Image (cartoon, rainbow, N blue to C red; front, side, top):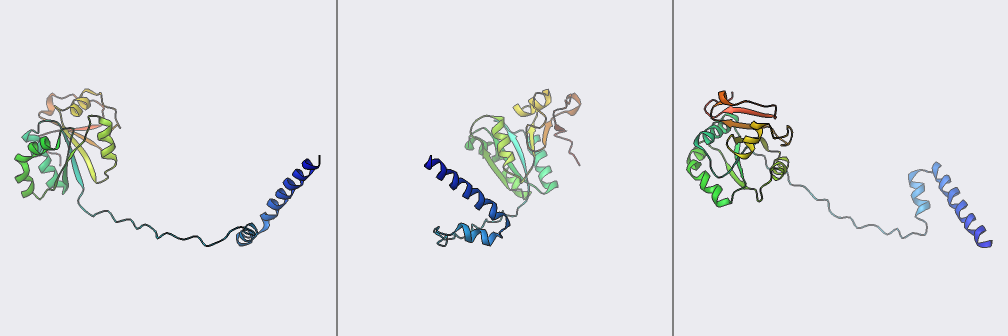
Length: 195
């Protein structure tokens, strides 16, 4: 019984001590709580200074497969020049295949002052593409051709409306023959530019 009485006294003292602290200032609380505690100064670590993001032009992303038609590349070049954006080419192909696709257009892009960045996305999933786009805020919108997987899924209405974190533009050869579903993508003709 004596152990129970001592335990109750300890609990009641703790409650009284807790209630007494309600009327103390923060400095007084610290002084009371630090009695008998090791209060050696904490060694401070120098704060990490984040490097500012490089100030550069925004980018337009082009998602392509094994082929890169001339009319699509012409549309992308004109769009980049008009909007003063650089170009990021995203593909599930290897880097060497991507470089081979871009090689015929390098001179034209360099003459237009467009910086081209090739990003081979290892794997083959749309969620991986969406993650990449979501983690790169410098990309203004994604363009894809109608004959590719992403373009076909938007035109067929199979793509969910907000699956991609940025706007999607589907480049088609002839807009007249295309039925546009409510898929959340803008459809443009390769030979007619949006103003």
